[in-house]
Amino acid sequence: MDFERPFLLIESTSSGELQVNQEALDVLNSIRQPVVVVSIVGMYRTGKSYLMNRLAGKQTGFPVGSTKGIWMWCVLHPHKDDQTLVLLDTEGLGDVARGDQAHDTWIFSLAVLLSSTFVYNSMGTINNEAVMSLHYVTELTEHIKVKPSEEKEDDTAEKFIRFFPTFVWTVRDFTLELKFDGEAVTADDYLENSLKLVKGNSKHAAYSNGPRECIRNYFPTRKCFVFDQPASKEKLRIIEELTDADLEPAFVRQTLEFCSYIFKHSKEKTMTGGYKVTGQMLGNLAVTYVDAIRSGSVPCLENAVAALSLIENPAAVEESFALYRRLLGERVKLHTETQEELSSTHEGCLKEALQLFMKRSFKDNDQNFQRDLMVRYISDLRRVVFSERMK
Image (cartoon, rainbow, N blue to C red; front, side, top):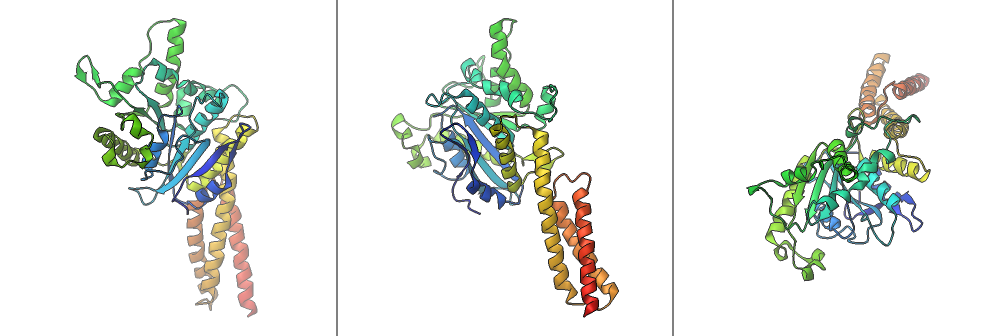
């Protein structure tokens, strides 16, 4: 597994198309552990990559200022040996040079679909302009479907929040005091106050409340971090070369608090039914979603689950059967002089192989793949019994 550097997971080509890169898939395919997936999005030139490099435990890594598409860095989880941390750094939204809002919305939607923690990064303060820059969230239900039905879906929030990640808003170069009416408040209080609905029935109120309502409804679990300016403008040009000693102490402390929260509170990526997503499954999800976008359709969560089942379960059958044959081949040679001993050996091998299948399989609700596997077990046992009798 190559965890030493980031890989371009989803490339944004010069023609504006999205495609998944095989090199990144190879890395994900090697990860059989559940993954914690943290994505970051935001306007371009807002320091997203710096935060992601710090989550990776590095000063440099993600290409600052030149991200096109979605970059991925898989690292060992600093606190959980049974999980892998997958960091997704997206290209900046609102790039004047590209000028493609539809493309930006797909990048935003893919970050939501693939992550278990979604970080939105902005500059200055959370004012009305900052909230309105999150208009992409109002379009999520137009770019993501839960069910494959062609009928118009009920787009109530309850249907989507089961699939959506937790939401973290990071505010960079924050200059205000965290106070309301002279009373000190937390960054979380500041966020919630900024998301209060604008009163009135005017068109302006309705327009302003769109992103606010979507964030409140689709992301019920929310967190906010504010960051002081890290250094002088001159130093900011070489921020990747600076050590913590060169940065403002408050910024260093705030960055550590952010990283600590992400490591402690970010959960494993899961699918419908509570299935934990492994690195291999995450790669297949990325391919499924990007293929849907390239075909001109909308990524569908239930279709993605069905596609994963058709990919993961045959692989689980093959791995389980290969283990069964290997174990049976090794143990039959030892103490299987009688039919009873052979039957006992078969049961032991079968038990271990089935345990592997149950761990590796995904949503085999009707047990069709498990039944196919049992047929192969019985057929192979008969082969072994016949072989032993012929000796």
